[in-house]
Structures are given as C-alpha cells and as structure tokens.
Image 1 (spheres, rainbow, N blue to C red):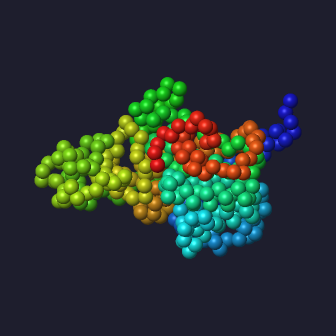
Image 2: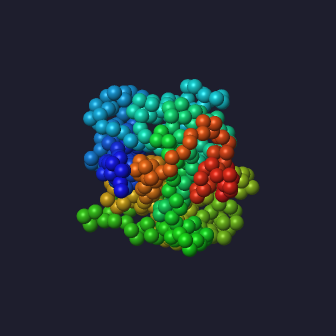
Image 3: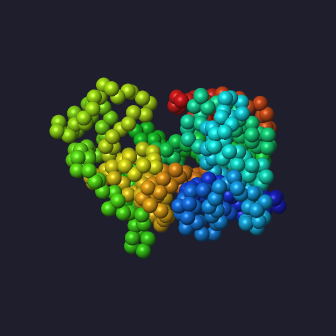
Length: 400
C-alpha cells in the first residue's frame, strides 16, 4: 500500500536552477530524466544565448550573479519551489582557514553560489569542478567548502566521476559534490560502461570516437555547427606533418618525431631542454575511432580528425561531449569551442540526474549526520567511484 506522501512525490515536478550554467550541458541531462529547469544564469553572453536556444521552457539570465538579488530572481521564476541548485562555481581561490586571498575574484563567485543556497534553501545542491580541487594543496579550500554548506544544514559527499563510465565517448574526470538537507544518503550514479582495455562482462563496452561520429544527428538535412572550412589547417608545414601521423598517435617525445616524420619535417628544437612534466604537451594528436576521446578542452586545435588532415569541427567536438546533433551553439568558432570545452557532458548529467531523483523520491536511506567530517579521508577516497565515500574498505584507483 502506497503512503500518501509517496504518491505525491511520484507525480510532482522537481525544479532546479543552474548557476554558472554555460551552454547548459548539465541542465540538458537533468531535463532528460524529467527534472524541470526553471532558469540558468551566466555572464558569458554567447553561452546564455545557447542555453536559451536549447532550453526553450527555461529562463536564461545573462548577467553578473553578484548583481542579481534572490528576491528579484524569485519573482522572475514566479516564486516556484526550487528543489535543486546546481552549478560549477570557481572554488580554488576560496579558503577561510588557509592563506587564501580575500580579494581573489573567484572567492566572490563561489560565495554567490553559497548566497543563493542560503536564501533559496533547496533540498539538494550539486557542484561540479575540476579534479585539481582535490589536490593536497587545496585541502583548506575543500574544508572551507564543506564548512560553508554544513553550517547551512547540508550533508555532503564528494566523488570524482569519469564521463566514459556513463556512456560518454570521452574520458573526462570531474569532481561532483552533492549535498542534501533531507537527512538521506547522497546518491551517485553507478558505473555502466567499462574502461578501454579493462573488459568487465558485467558492464557495457565503452563508447568511442567512431561511435560518436556515426551518431551525428541531422537537423532538416543539415548537421549544425559543422563548418569544415573552419576546421581546415592553414599551415602547409602542419598539414604535411599531420599527414604522416597515424590514427590514434601523436608526437610527444623525440622518438615519436623520428618514428612518424621524415627528417625534413622534424621540429627545430632541442628535445633535451623539454622537461618531463605531469602534462607534457602532446602535439599533432590524432584521435582514434576505436577508443574514447581524451578530454575535450576549449581550444579548437588540440586534436586532429582520425583520418582526415584537419582539425575537428565544433559539432564533432560536441558529439564527443555527448551533445545531440540538434543542440545548436551560438557565437564564433572560438566561442563555441569555449562553450563545448567547459560543458558538463549531457549524458553524464543524465546519470547524475537519475541519482538525484532517487533522493527526492525518498528512495535513499535515512542516515545520521556526522558533524565531524574527516576531510583528509573524503579527499583521498573521492577517487573511488563504486564504493561509499565513507567505506573503510575504499581502495584508491588513482594517485593525486
């Protein structure tokens, strides 16, 4: 027999707002599972135009969040109940415990997210950020974030999720912080797709660059944002070099140069002077149709087409981010790449949205809130996707 509250929850619409929404990748994923987007806010004009174009039933607000009062905002959304606030505010400049810079502009933006949460009192909050947030040097920042939201009555967890585990044809790791004041366990999506070269018969096979390109959807016979002219390489020397690089390969070391390029096309620099850093630059990187893409960034010249001697179009980059073919981007080529590279992949957003719905529909078990959060343990165990963040048996999959 269903309880009255369970029936109400099953038919009610759960509303969310997206702060620092960008083009609206996370919002698009949330909407796919039935969550209702009331509004998105961003100061990037082209991004908010893209948001409005693809979220026709939502309010898109172009402006500085610091100048938007929650009182005026509530009027714009007709005082509707807000169940979720999500967004990706910059956090790295914020720390009240360590030697944080009080004047760092990023502090103010994060505090604006806190202000909206404090004054609008959503049931659930979701923050997305880069994995660098979990670096040891940023532990004071993390402590401050937890302190801010725990003071407001939210129970928090933090995980690193990899987009390829949910069907995105791209390896993209992001920090996802979920908090709720429902006194229930925070839910994260479970891994659905296995990693490249790590076959797991219990999971689906990873999606690839080839899969993404074959699934480019057409809108009225035309692929949107697919300007091949803008993807052309202007330099003859660059064209000659990439023509010698095989699919899925790149030039990162002197041995790569000698292996793939004829001597007349070698680089004019001393390889011994290039340091071995964590992110040593890989040049002339051709994508591989049989593998997931590496992380799509905001630069249009990071990667080359798997078999053609050109860069990717914005549509191809968007498809690797799992945007559907009829999701149209506004602005110049540079602006579109910025929007795509900064976005949360919609399919990943969809997976997170399903987990949030479980919490809102009272399908997450009640817990006793621990007020003494062990930040060191939470930080280190955030890289384990499949076990509870508080589990004592957690084993790290990656080193920071």
